[in-house]
Length: 336
Image (cartoon, rainbow, N blue to C red; front, side):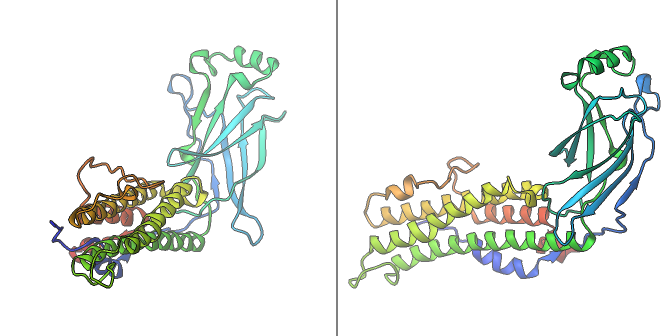
């Protein structure tokens, strides 16, 4: 049986993981209050801001990890009664939408209740949108009278508030969240590495008549299927389900790309494992098990198409994950 003679994925993990050096994140001073800077984008490029933030303050809710946002803003050019959508974004990803109404004095002071968010060193920002479809007839007429400020062709009218980016969470909370996230990822990709190694070692054990064989030294399919179906395929299915759920969890908003790589890694390990099992059956003169050719619920369709992922492919995915979660690859650290 032709085998990958390079170091196995699990061997690489055990060499690299203890040497991983945490990327030092320089948070600096992170004030919770952000003052307005007056940047504007008016008609003809004039300096005008229709919605002007004067304060954004993150307020922690008691001893919980939840925050509210206290915002203050001026809207001198926007008609009274106008409904404005405040889109909270992170790296252009929409996190939450709030809708407020311009009061009679055109000065806003709102406390916005945030859904649970994972503290991150990356900054959030608002995009404000005035959608003509959401306005009353009275407001619509007022907007039509200000055609220069609210041209129909530019609706819905949007402003990006890059000058008011802000961080949610203290430096301590951010670092603690990063540590938990790093542990979550490393525990799972290390487990995948272990499963990958166990399958390959199991195949060698059958070939040497030391594992997964009966008293006569012959291949024991029941023992092998108990191992493959329950401990390998079953566990990989659980891991893939966990990862997919992670895309919907607030704690992973800042780590969705790392989740994508982790899911890809689980698919690669699943492909390698079931392929090794199929090869084992063929070497034993048996027809491959349907559990390997068409594993239930386990995704094994890899990006490489028909090519079976190599150890180096898996290693590359782990390095990409480490980069995303702030763990420096050992190779880079040794070179530095």
